[in-house]
Length: 316
Length: 322
Image 1 (cartoon, rainbow over the protein chains, first blue to last red):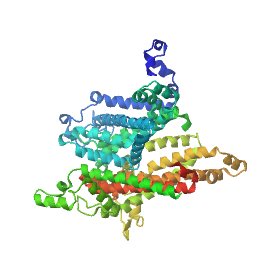
Image 2 (cartoon, chains in turn blue, purple; image 1 turned 90 degrees about the vertical axis):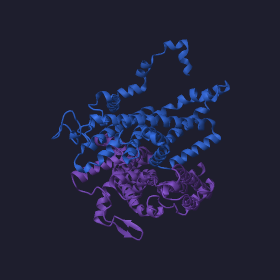
Image 3 (tube, chains in turn brown, green; image 1 turned 90 degrees about the horizontal axis):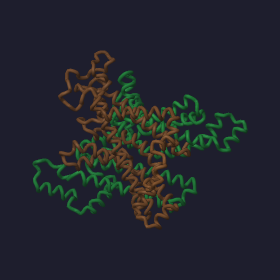
Image 4 (tube, each protein chain N blue to C red; image 1 turned 180 degrees about the horizontal axis):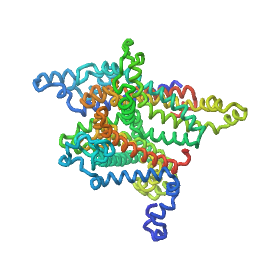
């Protein structure tokens, strides 16, 4: 299928951009107001996070830039607010806007990382279980059943606690993000495995796969180039929705104090820190990270819902 | 039928054994328990004696078998942190968590069912569309954020309700309840709402989907043709047929609500077993962590098995599928 592109006839095929513009998904995207608004907000949030070092007024991790005299300043529009601290400062004189931009960066990074890793684990397991059947199928799916019989948040907490314990002391600071990615992936892979397995079992018996088998195409190649592309649609929907879930799980773990450390805070860590000042009247330290986190997850979920409806009209 | 029940129970036992293995693995990975229990002054002889007494010199398989045997009898050892019996510790905290979860479940049913029916029968109106949109937000809000916002609004700004603790509790035998005192009930409201919000959106979406399905069926058309009042058709004829999956989901979700309650409990400083678990995680109190994992999974698996068996009793078609 993919070898088509190298044949001479490929020149006549529309370019990728044209194909996107002619697709159903693009049509429905341009006709769905909520999807376009959500995509625009998401693009804005991601760009602001990626270019945080360029646009943030301050580097919140550079202690030299923090000014203790500017601690706990309210947002600009409140009494006592000061330029350039648009959203106020925390108790260490850290600019909230900068902290949020950097925090979003970490949250998105961990979210993407865990979706990628759980896709890798889940799709490999699902393909193997569905294609080879028998013992491999039994083993992998039993394993999935067991994972599902423990609440996800509990798996994430236990994995991150144990993994952190196993890391050597000097790596704990750097390894925090990796531990979170691993913990979230291990709690989320089963869904992909089940989806891909079900689809693989359907595809396995179709004629094109039998033809490939008769031509002695090695199983690994059949899996990767023939079956995998046909299982991708439902996986794409699940991955979009799980990206939102992953960000939430990361934020929850960080909020509980077993996620990102305070010196490289994600949004969850910022909320954890801010929560301590809830009663002292400094509401902006907790409220702005909360709003950013919710905005991020809401737009991702709106896009995921829209994508699910577009790609699977039967579900409505 | 009997074969089916035995099969399901055997399956549940297998899963529980696997969970026990996981809990055991945490013990082994978390480091040498002797090192965690002794001080600098302990002599080598004492350490060896302790090692012998804890049975750490035996083979891993023997240790695992003993761990499972003890756990099945409710003996999870003693807490590394304060030396108390783990099961007693969890037992003291269990009523608080269960009351929270049950009240949250009740709230989610009372609010979620009518909203689900409403969004199904008034499809396309502005208020049902905004309810649908709100439900996306409800799914997207992490429960700790809901808790923080509730505290911010109702405790900090309005000062209506307490923001932490459980209020006064009354002891009924070994069960401690906060439902009988005014302060206990006041303290319960915010955490229960925070915990139920996600569940409300789930129930609402499920009821809506089921109702839309049922409303298309012939017997509803017939009921309408007979001139039965609309509300009676919706609530007596249609809703009844939607209740089965709702009840199932609610029952199955009680297990995960107990687990997710640990977040709500942390936000509201609710003295339940979730907070005990989070404290255990920060102090690396492995016996408490392992016991919590086993108990939560047990509740989870037991509820699932029970629902499966009940279904098979009600609907014979399901018996052959496993």
